[in-house]
Image (tube, rainbow, N blue to C red; front, top):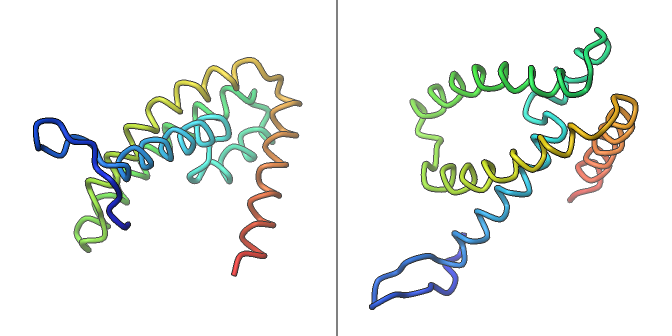
Length: 133
């Protein structure tokens, strides 16, 4: 990422615009992930819905599975030196905020509303990925 303007305090670099953008991206990703269960949840959530779980229980349960999977994947990628810890922490900090927002949004949706919204998000992502150059 290209270094952008930095906010300074007494000559010290306090926070770069990059950091703010990463935190904001983390919020957006956190909302989307918490709302839909993305990150492996795109497979787990529909399976749990098919098995009769409510939308809220399916999303929450998929996050426990994703946590375990993510820890394992982090260890593997770390050994391969494929982890940018600063970037991951900045996205994660924003994601903490977004996850809290998304969890509260999904709580107010019926399972039927959630299924429709989840389908629209998945189709939208598929179309975007398909046509992206």
